[in-house]
Length: 205
Image (tube, rainbow, N blue to C red; front, side, top):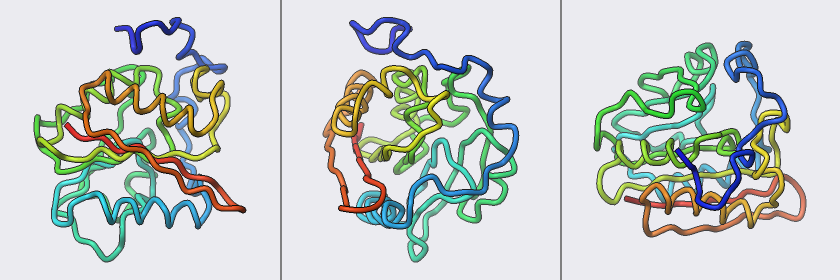
């Protein structure tokens, strides 16, 4: 399925076309943004994701950056490496799936009160398909928080992503959301004089 009208198919190509499962076969117990950007992500989650709700942590890892003092009914994690997900203490349960091969989420309709995707949207080759699935599993009005910085694995980030900088990448993510049926889309940025910048897009269904 075409992801965004008017874009050439090569827009979502990667420099490294090998299966993503091979790239993620070994765990990486590192954080991909600095402490300041992590604190900014956590604050956005604090303000946006409903306490006591069911949360979907998409493209997760061994850490979720959720506020430690807030209790959620459940946190379901998705990722590409089972060892990383198993080490994440915030996850109630988790599953591994390559969304570039199969963008459908094995989750019930309307099961979640919020969803988040931190510093990984740049790797999606079928972003609108994935976002449609996120919309399907969210309850009406539930937020979807997408955050990213200027870091990535360049051989695995899609071509169109690497041709843009932060503000244009925000507009690209907002376009993914609109195409997937999200509304009430808002964007903001945290750009400290030193350290990793952070851009955020939030939409709801």
